[in-house]
Length: 381
Ligand code: NDP
Ligand code: MG
Image 1 (tube, rainbow, N blue to C red):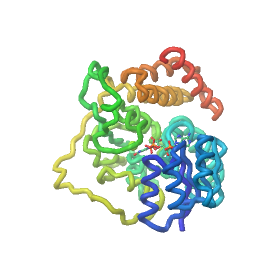
Image 2: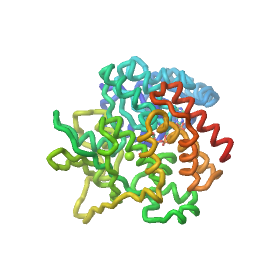
Image 3: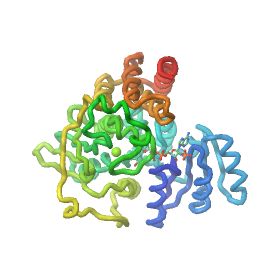
């Protein structure tokens, strides 16, 4: 039996990870964590019998204890609880499926404890990639990408040996507002932005996909995961989301991974790598598709992507300022407290406001986050 722990078991990636567990039948879930959704957590506890469960919210944890008094699971709470789940001795793999920079400390702790990381939580690499990647190397721990594009790149690199790649072709659907002009973005409402053309995902990443901030985060994620220069990553808008990404080798050969848009494949690949297992669901039908199309991203209208490139070029703690500002701005947009274009305005303002730190420690990363939040509170809320 393979043993896994999941941070964010009640979310989009978390529940699809559990679908794989159900389908394959040879994975034991030893620990799970979520924010406050105790109804779903209880159902997961009854089905998968994890020994350890973390509910971040303390009062929700208290209620869950009462509701599951008949079960043997131990229930913990807060950041200490997340850290316990991350390093739980029984598990071999930690699936990081929580949203945002909250994942930094548990991911670092898990690597130090020798856990393989199935990484969905891209914000952690964006902000702390310079700490996490060397640490994983030092500890001999693989970071297995769950993000579909990065999984596609990883799959396209299998068998590469010492061969070098010329560039990464990072595909993007372009989101629901592809083709719109800047002045048309002003009217966008929460409901419009939550409609992704190809993928069903959590709310935050769905908004990020619509602003192209998600693609910006993915450029940074790819840089850390695959150790390439920023200039070697090319974003290609491909509205059908069939080519999940590709690599170009030095001889011009382009190797890509294709498939239907289904996150269960990259999740399963990360859990069983290098083994491939059968997986239920629709398979790619090229005849039904007919054609695949490609275009350049519109980085002037969707400034989230150009700001991400700028953040990465400046380096240090600037990607943290970019990411923290986006996390807060997206939350405010979802609460209908700011307009849609204000998301990128806030990111730009916080990047300008940040005091540069070249090699930020975890504390300095969290301080940059706190300063960005403070700036937003003063100017935009
Ligand atoms: P969701 O919003 O669907 O799920 C988030 C999960 O995190 C939930 O289980 C939630 O618990 C939990 N959570 C929230 N706050 C806390 C907290 N304070 N402590 C512990 N757990 C918490 O997100 P997604 O699954 O969409 O995304 C997860 C990560 O994966 C993100 O980094 C995203 O960028 C990345 N990703 C997602 C993809 C997708 O298809 N969804 C694709 C590629 C990457 P609760 O339910 O209790 O709130
Ligand atoms: Mg992705």
